[in-house]
Length: 123
Image 1 (spheres, rainbow, N blue to C red):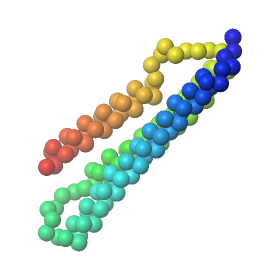
Image 2 (image 1 turned 60 degrees about the vertical axis):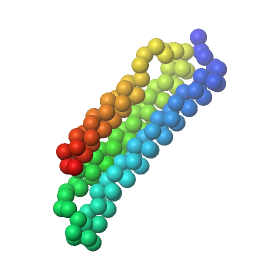
Image 3 (image 1 turned 30 degrees about the vertical axis):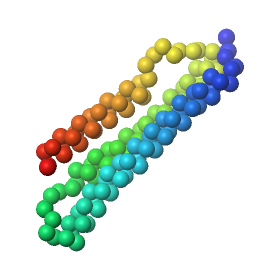
Image 4 (image 1 turned 120 degrees about the vertical axis):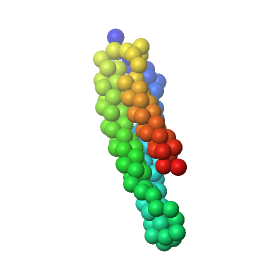
């Protein structure tokens, strides 16, 4: 039984595009976080009376968010291709949880926790 209803394919495409936006947002936010540490270190050289703190951690967190965004986009593309192939075969398997959503939520939870601990620790 093949499902030729275009709404099913369009819904899959909308979900794919939402994941692409999520990946791009992660990359953009990661870039801002990474560059903010660079901005603070440059500001420190201009105004030497600022406290001497290391801002290298923001570079690592920002880079990890950019990498996470890249992986989200790659996995979203692979998932979309697989989903369209399943739809073309007539397989409608909507009762399984989204591995990509769960993985991104867990990774963002870990990154957020690390950032929160760092902010409390550095003060």
